[in-house]
Image (cartoon, rainbow, N blue to C red):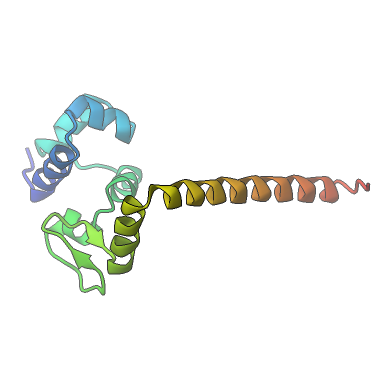
Length: 131
């Protein structure tokens, strides 16, 4: 068995997410046995798992793999979660303004619909069809 500190950091992330190994495995797209092997140091995850872990938990890859902090203009908490000060301010403002949250969600959804319609029109144009 290869014991490394990665396994401890992975377990910490899972516990902070307040998830069982089963729930965490489902979220990460692997089996609970795989999570168990990672947390016990029997296996090391592949790159796609690491990428998803970093994206899902906004985790500092350097901290996750080595336990060290990389130099950055972002703040990191003790578990390697990066925190951009501007994003933190925006998040707090949104939390205090639920009406603004609703409007921003509408804007995001409308933007996606416009993007989808634009792609559809491009597809039609590429076929040489005219109106």
